Length: 143
Image (cartoon, rainbow, N blue to C red; front, side, top):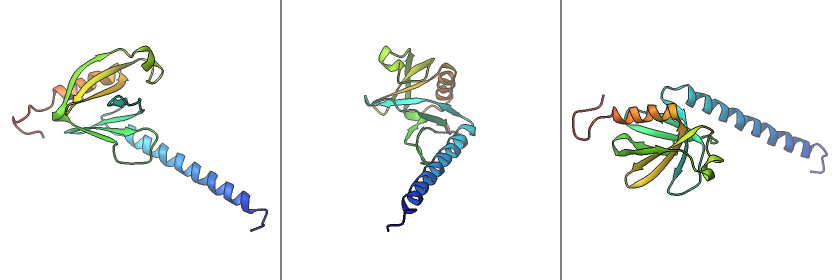
């Protein structure tokens, strides 16, 4: 293994794998964003730090995907019938550097836990409409 070309091959392989992972991440992001019902939204659960990601509305679920990930599965899934919209507020001074500019903080309760989403105001109005348009628990069926 005293071949002088070995470090170059190892470095080139590592660089190729990095470029491949970045391309996969870009394709994943493109596929998430082109689907209907997706918005950029940062999340903070149980007092943890803010994480950037993408929310996707499904018929009965709100799914949240981590932005810098290759996983095709959502990190968090919230059942529509268990989500309660508490309100919205402006970000605090400490939150301003952690969330997108011009965001509102949406306060939700999900099965006894507080969930905070940071999103643009337009996305917030879509989320509140989606929650209000959901079926009443125990009455009728959802198509």
